[in-house]
Picture (tube, rainbow, N blue to C red):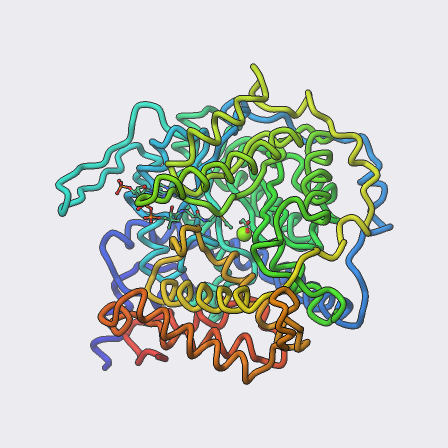
Length: 558
Ligand SMILES: CC(=O)SCCNC(=O)CCNC(=O)[C@H](O)C(C)(C)COP(=O)(O)OP(=O)(O)OC[C@H]1O[C@@H](n2cnc3c(N)ncnc32)[C@H](O)[C@@H]1OP(=O)(O)O
Ligand SMILES: O=CC(=O)O
Ligand SMILES: [Mg+2]
């Protein structure tokens, strides 16, 4: 045992107080250099208490909502909302963000995304990635090669070599949210904060290349997920300032777009932009996590039950109000108001169904561009021409920041933003949530964070809706009022649904794949979370324990 431990410790050359418990790999060692780890450790040490405090504030807010309070605008920061300030000018490199493609930090997908014709590629360590050690470290290797312009990939089965085109999308990176630990990197005996690892390693290795290729002040670029309050944006701003100081680059070089994807954050949009005003390049409507957050925030409010997931679209009043206010806020402050992700993806084997899916995307994007969004997200390269065509409708301008102010949205109220979504609940809604939730989790446990299911893109955010919606319906014993059968949801009914849906999944994927996969484990985790007396904060927090593999190797939890 001793030799093993000694051998492991001598692999990665770590600074004082840092311990790497992930598998050794020569490629990973080029990322996990002593200098890079020291940078991450310094960030962790400087900001850990701020992060702990911010997470404690989230718990405190949850306690208030659970006692009946509603989220709303903060009277104490009215001066920020009423003030006439603007954010730093948008860097020329990213003025035009009409279509942004997103995807996990997987090698072939990175090349395809950068070559896709989209203006921006958001490389994802978050909703689209299962954060296993292998995925995270390979992702860092891939991004380093992508930024250097040397990335390539040989698909041996198809004997195809992938390389970057001369013209590529601009690269944004989305680190994990504040809540996720990185259990393979211990700093002073504690797991590191996941997003500081993602940000720190990427920044350390790629910042100088950005300065050389884009010029001072223009990158690297980030997307920041799942924030609930401007105090969290303030921490990011301080992280950026520290990183710029360490790297000796101009203040404001790093730029970030914040996803507004939690219900409390919609009341903090001005405040978030204000904290990040030197580093901001807009806000984005993260619609899927936003719906998840609506259920989570109102978990104790029995009068705010959601209809079937498919009915909670952007035309629901609370969703429309959120998008309108986001556009107004961003344009008033001089930055991009980005739209969100339509879940449809191309359907290969059915041209009519494919056209219908494209039509839904077209409609969604048309709504966004008319409302004033400056760009949108696409989940798949096959959607880019459709999205681009619609967004080119904005005319001969790179964005609508100056041309569509949306001052009419100024009067949107707390009631508008919280309005209960309308629609009905059905047995098929319960079944679909269960079927999708289990299959998504099974993929996630085996290293895949975004999957096509029933012709839709599913990732951690969409799976969260399935989970919390089932939980909410079970907790309040709701009536499935859209079937005409008057059935009430309870544990017994849910148990039957789970049994039938897992049998259906086995039939659909085939017994061989089912046996080799982790469907049963996923079913166990998903069922526990749906039936738990108290709602788990995140699906992936508990599931993360199942994908942590410490070296020297410990027995798996499954
Ligand atoms: C709520 C949110 O947070 S949204 C943002 C996070 N979610 C995402 O980013 C999802 C991104 N999308 C994806 O992961 C994928 O498109 C999926 C999983 C939905 C579908 O993937 P697949 O079934 O593999 O797609 P498909 O087989 O049609 O792929 C065809 C080609 O397009 C490529 N491709 C598909 N999606 C992407 C993408 N997002 N980026 C780059 N390339 C892509 C595939 O690699 C494949 O390339 P190849 O022909 O060279 O082999
Ligand atoms: O991250 C995006 C979302 O919709 O969630
Ligand atoms: Mg999200």
